[in-house]
Length: 265
Image (tube, rainbow, N blue to C red; front, side, top):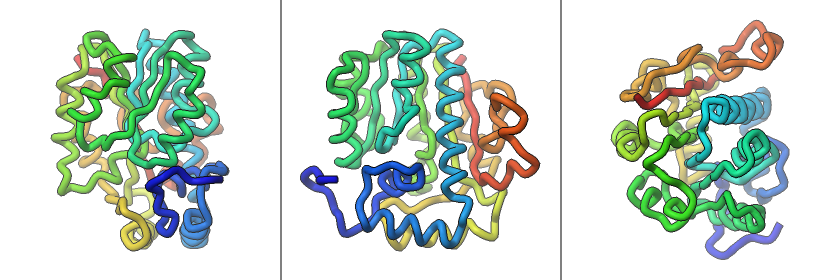
């Protein structure tokens, strides 16, 4: 693939490595090299990423079924099959979606993908700067924040370090969300595989500009302050409203990520 301007092709990027895990083609050799290194350490990583993507799709369906017709997807990465606008607009045509990411590859490809879709767009912005996101032209054009919105923070917050105060970041988004809005979060945790977490976090710290922070169930649960967790609460990825019991399996903790959806009252 050809790269847009401003792309550092010498250093792996978390969004592009994630695309590689999912079998996508919007990544570079340096991303594939890191992905292969991570998979050699932790062979289940592609399955974990696929489970995370499946959670996103189920969460979008859940929100659409409850009348949500607008989505703000923070840290959206590189769109792959089954992204938010595809799922939501298939279920409810006319649903409006704004993606947010800092990676120029993700933004450039998304712009191309969404060029003929009047109900979806992407803004290049840092999700850690809520005012920048919420005051963007793209959000103003597509989202009415006086009405309920679903804010997606799927595989985002473990790339927001404690020094950036993720709870305050979420609180600022929450303040802009109308009652009846939803917040969807998935987040890496060491509780499922503590033997793997430290080594994986070290790899991201050394190789990318976005080190990972694994958090406990209690810490992730605190991100839902001001929201009421819907059933089944905060659980491992495949346990969140699976389509069938076979999706969960005998050891859901092996997916090492927690997922939950909360409703703004």
